[in-house]
Length: 500
Image (tube, rainbow, N blue to C red; front, side):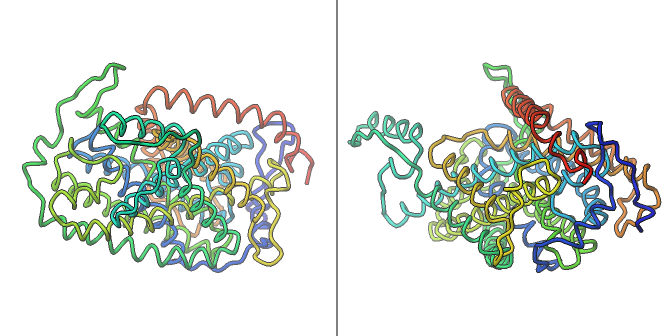
């Protein structure tokens, strides 16, 4: 094996590659506990995928962009993900280490390429967790209202949103007390609860997630079956609404709207990517990680398509609630009792999404810190819990503050942009590795790789190209900042630069 994996290392080039033999060494000396089974990994993937996509993004994507053709948007996103998932699976079987797309790229394409991937994964996971925390707070507030509990605005919303809601209520003639301070307290508290679970240990996190996954998958199946009896096929007409161009020149509905919707809901598919970040804690990573990646993606794509068809059949697409579309749909058809069930399941579902996103984020940090691209702080493992506790607490602190004080609307697109680029790069990287190392042991081989990789690159870049203009601008700014950090710190402190 070692003779097949030997690489020469150019320590002066930003395209220097981490020797593949070093990954084998990482696997052997990993300090993380190997406790995750194949179905435990699959559950983590489902836990990340099902949540924001079904309980939140379906309303936004159908109402503003795709109409009933939201199902087509999910198929588009699912197909683009499938190409990337097949490539991820081959990489995960070769390099079963934490770090996901970052680690794979470092061993095949080069350091700066890998750094850029890792930098974008930071944006993907951290801002994704922040978005989910705010969504969790919204569903929690809805649950309180169902029990006729009305907490003050300044405790349930960030400062900007709280003032906007107060102004709207005053305009409607309601008396709202003045306040100078506002905080989204539920979002802050749920982030710290998830942080505590993650610091305590991966086994506890996985067990918690497994329970939540069972509950929310059962709820999603209930939504599909029960909702099917209330579908009015007239709501699916027209299935693809006529295109409408807004003041900014953005096209809603029609084919362009469907593509934009696919880019938006892509945020909901990053769960299978999170599976690969847990390879360092899998019992049999070379076989179980590829299985979990593909299984979680297939299961969740089918559920997404069915839920989108049921929702747009129950309620006309332009009347869907953009904050709690599933609960609102059942409320509109008179199934009030189901609203309680769905709201509680959404709270649990969003919790597990947040758990897996923050879990993935800390493992990306761990992989980059082991390579010297980030400070040693990010690789410190707790002596008892065997988890990267310092970076977990740091991530929890950042996510909780941003979620508590910032209005986040459109951030899911920013997360999607980083994910789409990472997926396209992985499709290219696995192809490069197949050419460079044709004799490398591959427990799983991507079928028809040239075709799959090419389609994966084109599909993901196409969806990225069709995101909103300001999303692409923000992504470019984030990427430029990452390149600056690389040349100021990471290049000098890289293990390859130090000949370690």
